[in-house]
Image (cartoon, rainbow, N blue to C red; front, side):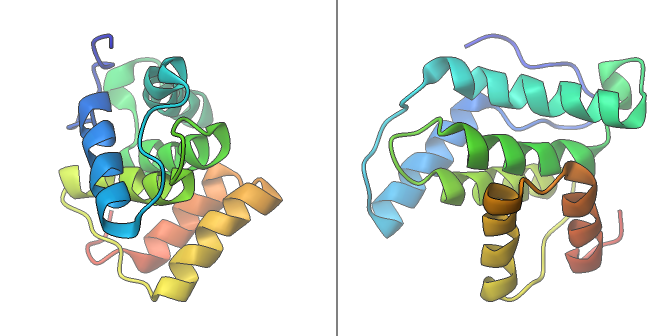
Length: 141
């Protein structure tokens, strides 16, 4: 795994994502393991880069933590990095990234599930995920 991008806030690491996945598999069941290791690094880097394009920021230090978290949800939900549990890890990656910047999501389980399924079925864009997050954060961004 390569060094993470240099953003202006704490960024979720690929090691932490693998740890979150192992915890999820141990708790909920499913097949363990990384299916596409190249997509693991790619998801984190793509989340930062996509947010830079979204905002027009010129440097990684200007990345928006909500945007990066939203893109993590999208990339992990759609790119099937792991053998199993990709929707779960998409959610956990997003919420753990938010936790790193002091934010938590407060929403009923049904709403959380609908968000993740909307990303997959409707190819929900980051802007809509960010709006959903703003409506469901415990602390304002």
